[in-house]
Image (tube, rainbow, N blue to C red):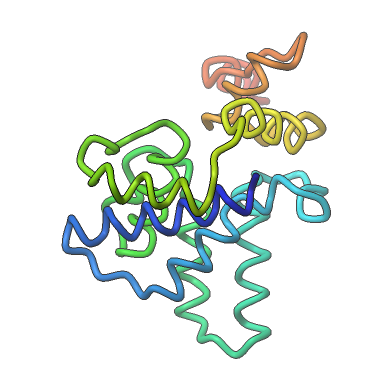
Length: 183
């Protein structure tokens, strides 16, 4: 499921980039797409940090070990670390924006109406969705349930709140009120 999702993210992000006249490095966009959800999976999900950072750290290490430049590794790191962050990726570099656009399109259908339906059909034929909605959400639950505090301030807390009995997101108001300051 993650493989096909990641390939669709790359292809959908590429279509959005072409339509918006962005010019991402295709190799960096591909690596960003392929690694963007690895932080949900073992062994990359065993740290107490956001899954996006887990995946970004893993991709950076992968690139540097293979001789990519620090700047290339930083672009990929940012694309993965920010792929679930609303609004910001679209204002950054083309690889970062295109990764986010591909994720949004595959996960929630964002921008589908602007893409050629024939191209969408080709992508889904090559990389089927199967029971994507159910499997995708279950992957989130499995990857986050043992580290729920990492979901603060992210869309990931929505998933846990919906599927994990007893989970309740911590609000910013609670964090401020519970800070160790006297006032």
